[in-house]
Length: 69
Image (cartoon, rainbow, N blue to C red; front, side):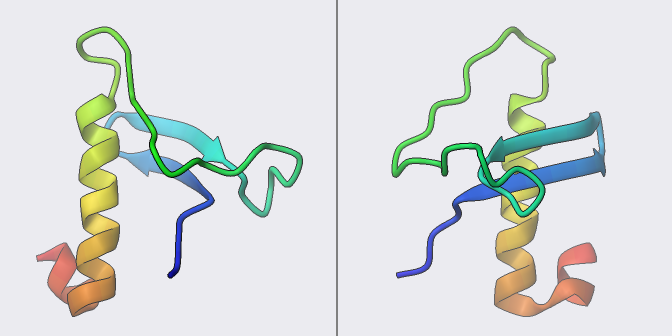
């Protein structure tokens, strides 16, 4: 089963540059585990991060054009 080992988001809504887990640019970082919790104060971008993941899900299901709509 495919799994996300890392994620980098740049310029999506309020997220200027966020890297989580192991990405091609950050090979020394540990990959994301099976369970991940996002904890932080209000307005720090937790919901925006989940919106970005939902966008990636929509892209894989119905294509980029449909996800952008």
